[in-house]
Amino acid sequence: MRHRLLLAAIVALILCSAAAAHGGGGALGFRSTITGVSPAAAGIKLIILDSDDRLELTNQTEKPLIILGYQGEPYLSFRDGRVYRNSRSPATYLNDDRFAKVALPAQADPQAPPTWEEVGQRETYDWHDHRIHWMSRTLPPKIERAKDEAQHVFDWTIPGIVMSLRTSALTSACSASERSAASTSSATASWRRSAL
Image 1 (spheres, helix red, strand yellow):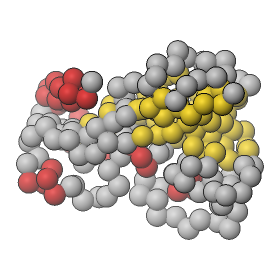
Image 2 (image 1 turned 90 degrees about the vertical axis):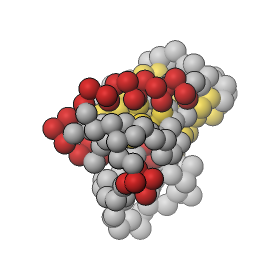
Image 3 (image 1 turned 180 degrees about the vertical axis):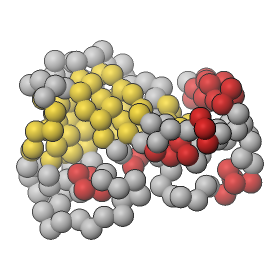
Image 4 (image 1 turned 135 degrees about the vertical axis):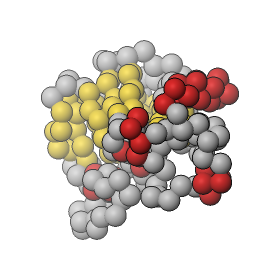
């Protein structure tokens, strides 16, 4: 039996010094932070890489896991000790550019049956996902007005399907903190507490 899994996390927008920022949106101060998977799914491990640039997922559930693309189509499949990506999913191409500024090939069709290509030889894979970061080079107006304050920016969800698991959600929120690197962890933690 297949059950929907919605991965829920918190996206925290942290305005930190340029020296403390690494990759992705870190140069602008963006930071995504995962708070969990709901319902709890033992064996699913999630990590945000380079502040907000990529999401890494490890599937140790011993059950197939499908991550859905932006239009609800199958995008990634974690199964049989491997990871496969659907070459028909528009996400396969949109994720090549941080701001999704790419022309989709004719084969990208979310309604078409999946065409799976192996992209990993173990059930761990990282990918750029536009759902976990701010999609503009310009800061949101409320952040621009108060760059030194912790602020919520947005929530996000990444849907997935795991065999034999009930419906679940990975939820998120986005915040901003003071520019100093020392304040980064406390601001992230405070947003975590508020999201629980």
